[in-house]
Image (cartoon, rainbow, N blue to C red):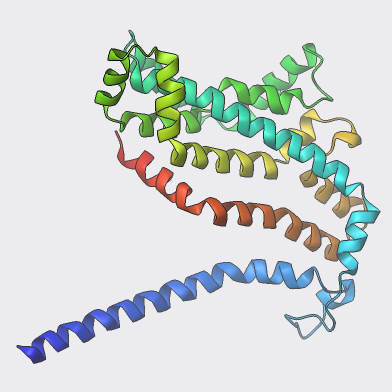
Amino acid sequence: MDKKMGKYLWKGILKKVVMYAVLILFAMLFLVPFFFLLMGSFKEQSELFRVPFQWFPDRFSLKNYRELFTSIPFFTYFRNTMIIVVCNIIGSLLSCSVVAYGFARLNWPGRDKVFMIVMVTMILPYQVTLVPLFLLFTKLKWVGTFLPLTITCFFGNPFFIFLLRQFFVGIPKEMTEAAKIDGAGEFRIYWQLILPMAKPALTTVAIFAFTRSWNDFLGPLVFLGNDKLYTLSLAASMLKSKLDPNWSMLLTLGVVMVCPVLVLFFILQKYFIQGITMSGIKG
């Protein structure tokens, strides 16, 4: 019996070792591009195309970072990007949570049909609606401002609505019924009861909204006509076209753009994973 127990124990340990080895191998494969990006930001232009290829630079230098901050109005582009990002996060959290609360906690005629219509809009690619939006914003004289990239976020996003609605459905109705007995109205229940309990889902929406607006290239390219309003994603395109192209600075800008996303995810990964899993299993 002891031999059998020992045999099963060693089999379990061996399975775990193999599983972790495979996971580490895949993790290393995913980290290779980022490692190349990071090392390239410390290299001279000539070192990037050296044969044979070398992973590490001959000498670690911050020259590319200094040139990045001085050769282009980096901080202006960073400020413009943050304006769009902050408005996107605030607008997405407010509008999507209100709509999701209406779909999940309120009973009204045609609720499920309207929800299905909202979900169907998820299949429409952004490029399909881009031309009508451009014509609309041109008539409103919003083109050349931040308004097309910020105001629209206050009208909801179907994917974010779906995530929050799934989370809200999983909250026991007895809690809201108890609050109603105590005299709380729908808005108070939404603001003081539901939202504090939905921190994981709200964090997930905030991360998605941040990455979407932080990395957005097509929207700023179409709606921002003034180079003083450019974002960091447009700065990368400008570096590629105007500096013929300066690959070392492009890699440096890539590191600068990737790091905030990684830091945000590692800080909030607990809430992010919890929000994804709980939103997915609630129906």
